[in-house]
Image (cartoon, rainbow, N blue to C red):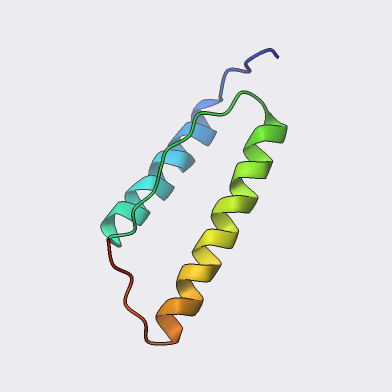
Length: 65
């Protein structure tokens, strides 16, 4: 597998998302990606996780560390 170098715009976006999650108090794990396919899979997982958190919050459950 060849590791692709990320472009600066994608890196800025990733940092922005990380900062937004941190500011919201949502724990997250930064995971390096080697290629676009891996990134797409991890983004799908993150989206599903955030949707589950949103559903829990809407149901009145507290997210605890």
